[in-house]
Image (cartoon, rainbow, N blue to C red; front, side):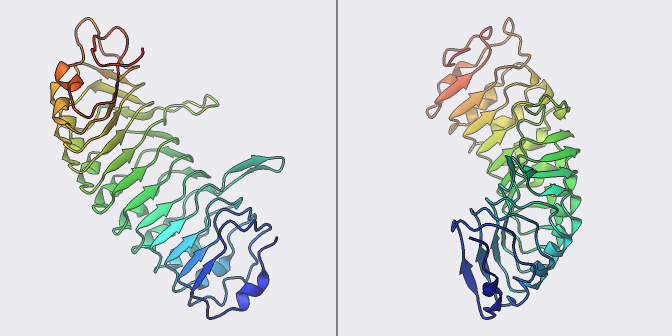
Length: 317
C-alpha cells in the first residue's frame, strides 16, 4: 500500500503512528507541508522507498521522528537541521541489498545536524553513510544516545564528541575508521557504553588501520562505564591499569588487537565484570598469565585469552 497522500490534508495532527503497516513507494513530496503541529511521527518498519522530501522542514513542532527500517536512500538532506524541536531521530536500518541494488542513506552526514541541540537520541546505524564523522555532532549537548554503527565513516574521530557530557551510549562500530581514541573522550562522564569495535577490515577485505595506537589513560575517567568494546582493531601498546578504575564495568572486549601484557591485576577492582576477552593479542604467555584475582570475581561468566597464556577461568582457546 502506498503512503496515503490524503494524510497531508490533516493539518491538526499532533500524533501519527504508521509503524509496520506494509507501506510502500516513496513519501509524497508535499506530505509534510501542513503538519506544523505534528509532535510525533512513526513511519518505521515499512518498505518506503525514495528520498526524504524537502517538505520535511515544515515539521516545526516535531519531537519524535522515526523513519527507520525502510528502504529509503539518497542523502540525509540539510533541511533536517531546521527541525530544532527534535528530541528523538531514528533513521536506522535503511540499508537493503536486492535486485534493485543497494539502498540506504548515502554520502556524508550534513553539518546542519549540529543545529539539533535538543536531540537526545540519534540513530542512523545500518545505512551507507560515508565521509568523516562531522565535528558538529559535538554541538548536540543534550544527546544521550548516538549510534553511527554499520556505515562507511572514515578517517579520524572528532575530538568534539568529548563535549557530550550527557551522552550515555556511543556506538561507532563496524565502520572504516582509521583513528586513535581521542583523549577528550574521557570527558564524556555520563558514558555507560562505548563501542568502537570492528573498524579494522570489513567482510570484503577492505583494509583500514581501524582504531589504532595506544589505549588512552583517560578512559579511566569514565566512572559510569559498563561496556567497553574495542575489539577487532589495531590497538597496540600495553594494557592500561586505568581500566581497573571502572568499578561499574561489566563487559571488556579487547580481543583481536595487538596489545601487550601484562594483564593488570587492577582489573580485579572491576567487581561487576562479567566478560573479559583478551585473545588474539600479543600478550607473551611465557611471561604473563591471567591474575587469579580476576578469575575469582563473583560475577565473571566468560574469560578468554590465547591458549599459551595460563588462565584458570578461561573458556576455549
